[in-house]
Every structure is written in C-alpha cells, then in structure tokens.
Image (cartoon, rainbow, N blue to C red; front, top):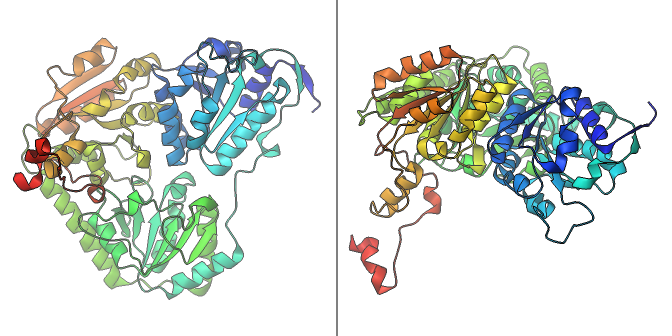
Length: 578
C-alpha cells in the first residue's frame, strides 16, 4: 500500500484502528479535540470518566481480561499528571498500555504556559518508555513504536505529542501490527529447556509457582499436566488467585500476604521450584504467619517473558526467557518423553489434601468468630460462597481487601484483578468497570474498604452512564484498618489519622448517582444481598458494616520496629514507659 495524504490526527486514528482499538478512555481536552472529533466516524468509542486516574485502572483491567493493550488520553498538563498513579500501578503489574499524552504546542514550549508540564520526565520512571513525536510526519511511526514496546516489555508507554502536531498534512502508510511488532517471544533456548526438564525429573519434592504469565496465556491446563506428571503442588503467586483452578487436587492456593498456609508449607519443603510467568517479587515471597517458606536451598527454574525479571530477587538454577505457555509446553514434552506413564506419589497427594483441608477449616473457624456487627472474615466467606464460578473479582488494597486473598478461589472460569504490589487504594472499582467493559456478560464485583471507596465512589456515575452493572462491595469498618493495625501493634493504640467517621451510609450516595444499593448489618444477609445485586444487572453498591477491631496482621511487619523517643517531651510515648 502506497503512502496517501492525510492529517496527523487521521494517521493516529487509523493506526489505532489497525491495532484493533475500539475505545479510548479518559477526559476530553482541547489539546486533542481534532483527534477526538474523528472517533465516532472511525468507530472508536470515547469512554469519559470522572477522574483521569480511573481511566488508567480501567484500561489496566481491560487488558488483563482481553490481552489487548489499553489506551488512555487526557488534557496536556493536569489531565495527564492525574494519571500518574494508575500508570505506575500498570507498570508494576506488567500491563501493556499506551498513554496518548498531548503536550504544549511547539511555539510555546518552555514558557511555562497554561497547562504546561514536562510530562516526559514525570513518566520516565513509571513507564517502559516515553516516545516523543519529533515531527508531524512521524505521528504514526511513533505510535507504532509505543504499541511495540508496550507489548514487548509488558507495560505502559507514554506517547508524547505536541498539541499542534495533530494538524496539517502528511503522507503516511498505515501498517498492520504484524509488520512492526512480534507478540510471541517463543519458548526460550533449547539448552535451558533441556536442563529444566532434567532438574525436574531428578526432584524429590518439586513445587510449581504459577503467575501472571500463566493467566495471560491461558495455560493453566498445561500447568495441570506438568503438576500431574510430577505430583507437584501448584501455588499461585501473590494476588493471582486465578493462576490455577482451586478444584484441582494439586492446588494449594496463593503465596504472599494473607496467602494459604497449605501453599507456604508445600513451598518450604521444595527441592525444586518451577516458577512460570512470574518475577517472584520480594513482597510476594516474604515470610507470612511466621513461616519463612521460600526455600533458600531449592533449585529455581524461572520462566519470564522479560529478561530483566530473571534472577532479580532470587538466585536461579535455570532462567528461561520466554512465553509461559510455550515454555511450559516444551518442558512438558521433554518430561513426557522420559516418563510416558507418570507414577502418582500417593503419600504426597494425601499430604496436600490434608493441608488444604486444614487451611480451609481454619478460614471457616476464623470467620465464625462473632463480630460487631459483622466479622469481616465472615463477610468474605459468605461472598465467596455466593459468587458465581465465572465472576470477575477486583480487589483493592487495605486490611479487608487483602484478607480476601485467603478466601477468594477460582475454578478456571473467573478472574482475579488485584492492585498487586504498587498497592494503591482506589484501584478496584475503576478496575472492575474496565473488566466489565472487557467482558460485558460476566458478573463483576469489587472488594473495597471505606477508605479506598472514598477515592473511587465518584465513578459510580461513570458506571451508570455506560450501563456497567458492577457490584461494589464496600466494607464499612470506619478506619484505615491496615494502618490501624500498625498503630495497635507498635504505637499502643494511639490512633492518628486512622479513623474514618461514618455517620452516613454510602447507599443514598449511590442512589443519588443513579445506581442502586443496600446496607447489610447481619452476616447471614451478606450472601442473599450479593446474589440479589448480581441478578439486577445494574450498577450496585453493597455496603457491609463490619467490625473495625478485627484486624489482619500488618502488611510489612518486617519494615516496622518498636519506637524509641529521645527528646524529653516525647519520652512518655516510649514503649518502655507504657
């Protein structure tokens, strides 16, 4: 196809269409009005939100569900800087995303004009790349580069374009994605795969750790075959509870904060770990429940698509740069060639069964302790019982939302969209909206505390506007309870900045914004209320009033220490004087 005349805005729009982009999320602004005007004719829907941060979280989740790179846009300066938190979260989550970032016009750059900001410098540390358009003739080429890097390095890329570069006349050829980027990195080197299979065959107690790469490549069936051949328990990485089906007899659940003791005890005794599609994050492998479960002596086989992640946090025996599914398939071939008829280790199977049963019993026991009015664990237990098997669950950060890591189980149809290690509050509700856009027929809920809800409740009107029937499950415990736990354990119950007064229910707010809602104050009402909310297929706020004194362990006990005071005026606060 020869180059043809078009405007830069048209070239950008046509490149988005070639990438299969059918919507862009953000808040409109004068800087990109010329591009925005083309969207309806092009068939690209513009999804307006109430705050630009929400756009990033929505597209993060959209990509996690569909595998397609999300696209966000905002006004130059403050519109784009409002996206910093959600872009940083997507970067930590390894989610492909393109941020179309208008900047000040070239005649005025550097004059500190209206809404001018050096967004390239601001975003350099929280993106995989920042691409600046050097000339209007390069708008399509630079946008192709942004998509290429976003997919290749699994993360967000800033596409910075001076606002006057949308206008004019250029000659451009619109390319198809296969002409400028490759989606699959393959299975890794033959030598590494051979060595991995050799080590696994010699293992006495292998364990598989299944991560985001397995979720993205939809390869839990391959992981199951590997596990069955090796009689290896399968642990999910932190907040990727959908990385292996919970009804498989080799499932032991997630590791990391509020993960399962079954997974941790299994990992602690491993002599070989096959880590598929995971960077083995530091936070996701910290000791929990006083179990230092990540074994230093185990041989680690780590598979990750990004070479930067290999051996970054734990020394490995074999590092494989490759697609989690492709690598797993090749390892399985090598194992099956040597062991065509696997011999099941019945003793190990029984150990796994007992560990999982004991853990699930412990969870129920903890949940059935009375709360005033509701034990948050009891609410999580009832929620898990009531959720359909194909539900998508977005979880926030905080005491209750993170405790859900213990209770949420997926059989393979549903999906877990979590805030992950960036850990910003206000993630889950806009993420749930993005997940609902990605999967319109699926039941979608978010689990969020009242602190994080205060940062995202304005998007209820976005849900209403776009008819997104997400159920926000809001835990009303009247405090920032993750930090409250720190003040209980380390600061003798001196609560500063912790309390969130709750004289008014969130339900009338939801109704005022056009949604529906209900407030629940009895544990036996939680399940029926959730089922009713899901059946309505409307934006819904389910407010659960729970006990703010029943708290999970601190997030980072390792990072805190008992305080000391040296100035006389503060010594009465010293631990020794309690």
